[in-house]
Image 1 (cartoon, rainbow, N blue to C red):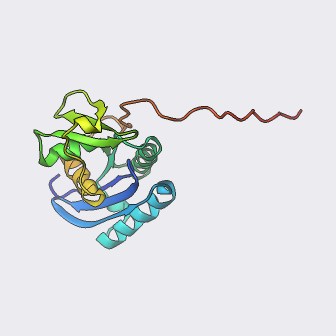
Image 2 (cartoon, rainbow, N blue to C red):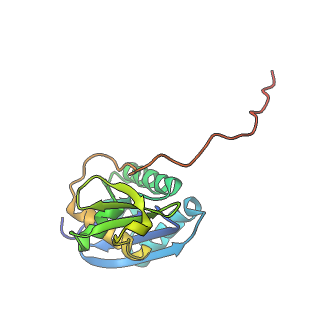
Amino acid sequence: MPDQLILAFDTSAAHCAAALLRGDEVLAAKAEDMGRGQAERLMPLLEEVLAEGGVVWGDLDLIAVGIGPGNFTGIRISVSTARGLALGLEAPAIGVSTFEAIHHEQPDVLAGVPAPRGQIYVQRNWETPALVSAEDSDAVLPPEPRDLAIRIAQVAAQKEPGRRPAPLYIRAADAAPSRDAAPRLLD
């Protein structure tokens, strides 16, 4: 559908970003830098983008979501939101990696996404992603969050709906079990 109404969003890094497109036209796009709080801010931000675009939830034809790589919790926030919206709105949801968003405008570059501890996730076109030292990489980094959300929508518009969106994890989460003793259960 060339004039489909697409809501795209991403919380895979220290931001909360969303864009609303009808075909190639950007109706609204917003992004906010934030290290924490994406779970609380995402839905209000989406409501603002829809209001700015003059549409309501039921008008949407497609949900597009950034699947990472990036922040483990941030990716889970946006992917679970997209899956819930798709179910509730009976609209397809399509996951788009940050690599795909970079390759959308620069298909032959080494795409990179900053990672913790001086590292970077990289991928050249459709090769297997890798984690390398940032010092050793000349990768093209993602665009600003607002533009990333727009590109996610543009890529999703070209994909066929299929499986539900799923996070793109390249390495295991940094989370560790609590060192605190478990609470004592009372009878």
